[in-house]
Length: 96
Image (cartoon, rainbow, N blue to C red; front, side, top):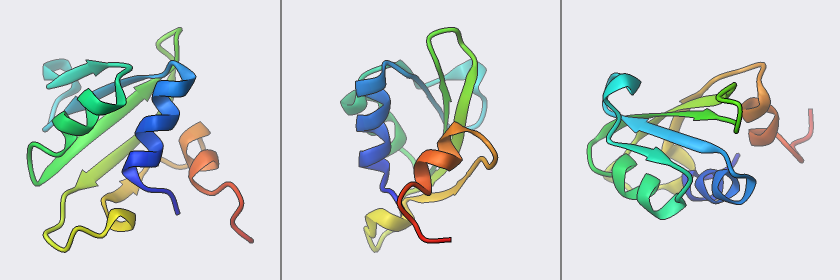
């Protein structure tokens, strides 16, 4: 399992756009390619969403973020999309 920090760094290094919002991506708190700015936006509330798109604005993945009081980085990504590039990246290296 990957952490939020790993995901954001991967997105930044790959040039992927992160759209961070409390509820609606049309009212994003942050939209861009900076891992640090995305992290600040995603940790602003207890629950946040991040939609990830490639340079052509095609869907790359989605994750639901829960900023738990226990601070476990592996639990910060509470859920994510499946059968897409994010899902494949999240599960790289794990035994079936």
